[in-house]
Length: 213
Ligand SMILES: [Zn+2]
Image (cartoon, rainbow, N blue to C red; front, side):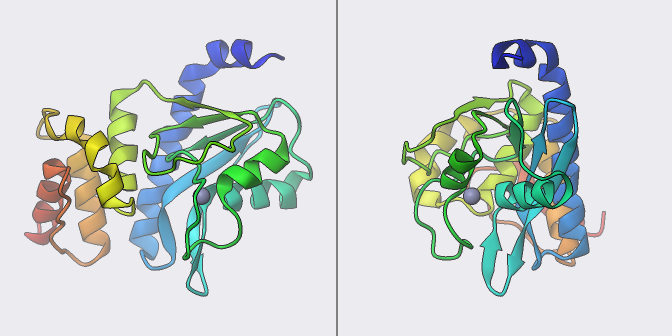
């Protein structure tokens, strides 16, 4: 199967998986926000087997979601077959990070032979271009916003700021995903204020949780 055909046939399916990955991030935050991180990823093979995982903290280092998903796939199904796709709420990292376990996700994915990554949000702070795969970003605005909010909790803020300017101007309705994400984030921490410089809706959601709404 060619990737183009796969993509046209199943863009909606990939978005459905992204929604499930977002839900995994939120439930990880509810379970243990110190242990589970703000990214989830999955390996989807050509037989539609989907193995997903969130990022997690192990002895002070972050095992990124792409690595966690690839590890989980290996332990279940062996080698990742050609034609598989990696789906992630945030595009793979490529640069050096002191708190990351092992090599970058880009280097790791290069080794698997996977040549398409479908992301909810493309992290503008990861510039190295050693990737041998193509990154496609979801066009679904709700998924994009939610994944963006997740990523903004850990992104290098200064480097990301330019890209964030567009987000500042985005209108937000009462029940938008930013509110919901902020609410879940705050609730997981026992009701605290958020101070995201880019997402007033995230902060407002956190405020609602803090106020016990
Ligand atoms: Zn990574």
